[in-house]
Length: 395
Image 1 (cartoon, one colour):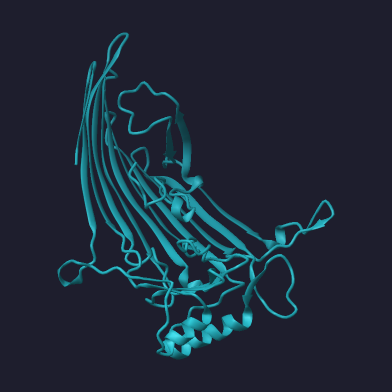
Image 2 (cartoon, helix red, strand yellow; image 1 turned 90 degrees about the vertical axis):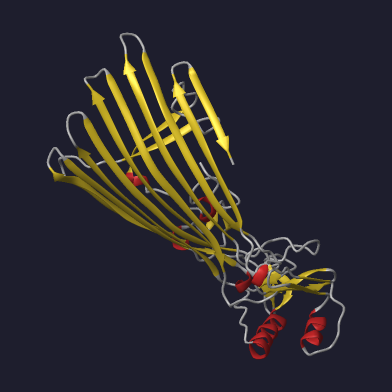
């Protein structure tokens, strides 16, 4: 399985989504140590999810699930539990049946999920506010800073407390099964996952303490980012059986992954403002997000021929996979300013010279300032024959 994004090899994992609806799955196989030579490309165990198919009867279902803070208890063994507002909604359907009885069948499935999770319990310091979640950051200074950015730069960094992060996912599956004859059966499947998840700004501030929400620092939400993870997959499979003596399985398909980051408020430098040597507040575009994206395509072709003898089964076949990936990563593309104090920031914004704790920015050295993108192409070729398993990989 090709790597999806930079933190996981599981489709949908970066956005905490599943690629296929559980209601669309007929069976799950777990192969701990398979001896079948046609299975490979994994270590430890192989997990196969077999999707439902249509038959001669129309079958379907629909569901709706929801969770929110009103379903959470408020007392645990005599101790009060403080809950913040959240909401999770999940709904979907499936339907399968015949197009032509005994000959052609269909199956479709769809599922959507909408989540809203609290970003952080921490709030700014203000008269009348008490509790373990009250930070050293003054509400009056955050309000003044936001107004200053709007009035002087036309940039609204957003709120800095009491807001939620959204997660969205939509997944669809369409499947057709065609009994061409008693010898040949054709199956075609297409599924897609469209998902996104809002994530907090990158934690590290390179030696100045965490820049996101904690007891010492609050960040503005437009320094967070939206991670999008989209998957498109299609596959065709032809199974043939010749007199129960020979069988052939032909499979071809392609899977495309589109992963990228976006953010609110427009393009703006990352600004970190310190107090007593560690982060006090942050605003602007996340350092690791500008132009970041991974587009990958995996093409697959496989054919396996099996002969069933009296006491033995002999399999011979070929497997070919082609990978193409385009990865872009330009950290600090809009620049980063690190100020020793809030006063230094206001003085610098007013035209005075101040000593910055750090300034950095990346530029493209390509002709015309084009965004640099790494292109990786590779292919795997396997030839299977009785008593022989050859693997050839080229990059």
